[in-house]
Amino acid sequence: MEKLGTDPILIAVQIVNFGLLLFLLKVFLYKPILKKIEERRQKLMTIDKERELLDKKILDFEEKRATIINTAKKERDQIIEEAKHLAEIERGKIIEKANLSTRDLLTKVSLQIESERERAQKEIDTKVLNLSLAIARKITKRLMIGKIQQRSVGYAIKELRKMKLANEN
Amino acid sequence: MKTNHQKAVVVSPINLKRGQVSQIKKVLEEIMGTKDFLLEIIPKPSLLGGIIIQIGSREIDLSLNGKLKQIGNSLNK
Image (spheres, rainbow over the protein chains, first blue to last red):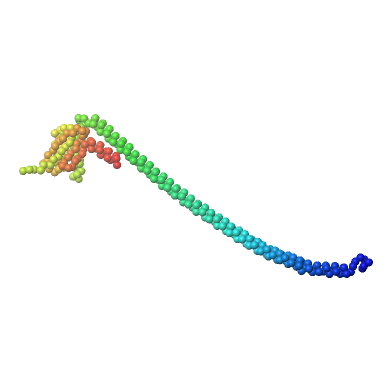
């Protein structure tokens, strides 16, 4: 061994040194570091688990939100449909009412027009009659002279006699 | 003694002849049932024709005006 250039004692000491170093490193460096690493790993695992839980909660929340939104949409559509239906019914009623009113009004107006027409016709008839009578009187006045008047008195007396006879019967 | 005389008034457009007056008087006697009444003749030219007789509150219209009125009333109905 000495011929090779190595000292066995030195090697032994080196080995012991190395071993001691290893031991010291293991106790004072590796263990704490590994412990720290393990702690960190545990922490990370916990964080992962919590993240998974959160993700699940978020999913649940999203599902609930979607359900609520769907339900709200359905209710909204239903309300709109009902409102449309009611509005249509009301529209029909209003139109019906307006039609009835118009019909009533037309009937009233027609009756009024007819009544006015009858009244006007009666007025015209009366005026024509009065005019005719006035003309008849004027003409009669011109014609009733002398003998004609005498004759009219004669006719009146005959009529008086007839009246007396009729009363007796 | 006071006697209650009935009165008959005859309205005529002309002065009546005697014959006409006696004819009217005769008919009136039969209508009124008595000869005891006063007959008054009133001329009224506006009458046009015929006569009107008034006995108390009763009036008998035999005039032309009356006839024209009757025609007008019947046409008005």
